[in-house]
Amino acid sequence: MAQTVGQIGFGTSFGIGDGASPEVFTLIGELFAVSPVGAEKPLVDMTHHTSPNTFKEWLVGVADGTEITCSANFVASDAGQLLVRTTFDAGVQVNMEVTGPTGAQQETIAFPGIVTAHDVDRPLEDRQVFNFTIKMAGNPTYT
Image 1 (tube, rainbow, N blue to C red):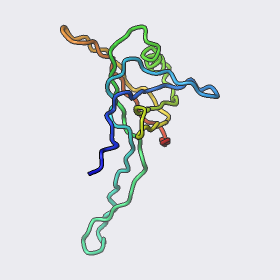
Image 2 (image 1 turned 90 degrees about the vertical axis):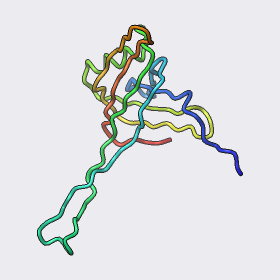
Image 3 (image 1 turned 60 degrees about the vertical axis):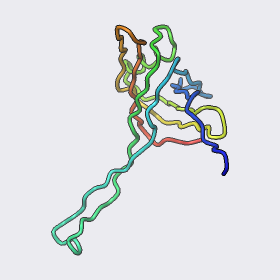
Image 4 (image 1 turned 30 degrees about the vertical axis):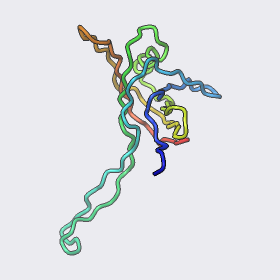
């Protein structure tokens, strides 16, 4: 049996672009969780009173990028975490990218995104966590 070429997600990064050319991405420090990055196409029910054989009829709707939730150890001075907050305050769409760990399965997913939420969780006896949510605002590219 062949040995797997799959790998764990350790080393994944999330970056926010500066809009320059060439674009430079500021990474979120101490990132430890990134939800799945993808897209979906909803189905639109087109059934009518004369649909053939009384079966529902469906069309594929418009594609939409997922919401991405991320978590990092809270570091008040981290440039990436500060950039999440300032991007949220500005209410602007910026280029973002998620890059998987180095290795045979490394992939970068680049997309325009909007910061829709951020917060800091400060539990009594556990790590402080910086959480943020991104709405994918356009077609992703995979490299």
